[in-house]
Amino acid sequence: MSEEIFLLPDVGEGLVEAEIVEWKVKVGDVVTLNQPLVDIETAKATVELPSPYAGTIVTLHGNPGDVMEVHQPLITFDVGGAGGTKAKAKTSTKPTPTATIDEQVAETTSDEGRQAVLVGYGVANEDGVATRKHRRQGAAPAPVQAPPPAAAAVTSSPGLAPRSTPPVRLYAKQHGVDVAALQGTGPDGLITRDDVERALNGSATPSPSTRVSAPITGPTTTSRFVGREIESWSSGPKEERIPVKGVLRSMSEAMVQSAFSAPHAAVWVRVDATRTVELLESLKKHPGLAGVRLSPLTITALAVCDAARNFPGINSSFDSEAHEVIVRRSVNLGIAAATDRGLIVPNIKGADQLDLVGMASALNVLVEKARAGTTTPNEMIGTTLTITNVGPFGVDAAMPILPPGTGAILAIGQIAKAPWVVNDEVAVRHVVELAMSFDHRQIDGAMASAVLAHIGRFLSDPAPAIIVG
Image (cartoon, rainbow, N blue to C red):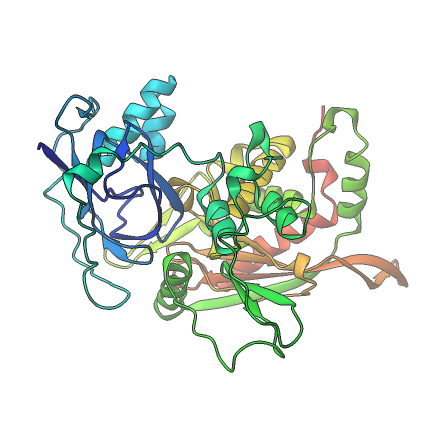
């Protein structure tokens, strides 16, 4: 027997742990190079790890729900024998490369090259050991030992998982839906959450063998909370405890860190956004914008970037160790997104360089990936300015907490009809309330007010700043 140990890789920049969501293999399985092994959830995203070896699974060093430290044993392989081949793309055991996995994959054009990067990145170094430790029950998970050799010899290699994202597969598993039996309606046949929900509603047949039934004593309505179904007030238990881990835990820690380390201040203003509403309606009829999904958030994102160009200090962060203000000349625009797993803030890199169509496309991709749970760790780092849109929830205003490491966040309320004075007469207009929280260490009230007023003027008459060919 020739054994190789696959260490849990750092799939993002500086992550120290990840939770095992679902094993796709079991002890004794014969796996091929790049075959999906496990879904893990980090503080930033859910990631599917491919196999860096071809061989037989000897030990799984953890169970679903366990939180593992980066660079600790995840799977032990037997790569000996005729079928055991070590990955050619194995990296050295020196410290983790500075480029993120997304950057490495982006620089590789061929499918084989991308697979090699993923495999090579998965073979983590042996020198970096995480210092923070967290287990759900305070103890290391019990390794799953291999069966006798004879049993392992007759175990067949499992097939590849159906084409869907890890959160969708987990959602389907929790509700007893066989993903393999579904027809995907997403891009290139991708099985989406909507496909699973259609199966739950009766348009497709879920697997009866995996569904768990329980007596119903009251209304069957349920509500959603960070990826879990919660029974209604009348039919549910007296209380329910929800583990704070993964994205939810990251959000909790980040908000506490920000609230008690950065002195928050805020300004707000009400804006007549009637011309924004009218412009969006006219743009939807523009022949050059057919198929482009536009919304008030698109115009607001352009307004925020325009404000940063005119007031660069708003696009800054405070280095408390060096006692320096870092002003950035490129806007990585964060968009707060509520997902089933909790609040995440992915960002659009270089948002200040985008025009109307580019911004609309970038926002749509960002939102779709957040909902599908496919946001990458690289899309979660480097945010310089943030927008949170509470309008779709029917909320007029909000006073948001700053994402750590940023200087300002803008909250947009719903655009609703309201009385407004126009030329000394009361008229019905489309009104929106804007609120900006900012770090008072590097941004004073004068700058924040000037920025918010600039955004307000942009939304009150956006047409001159938007050129459509």
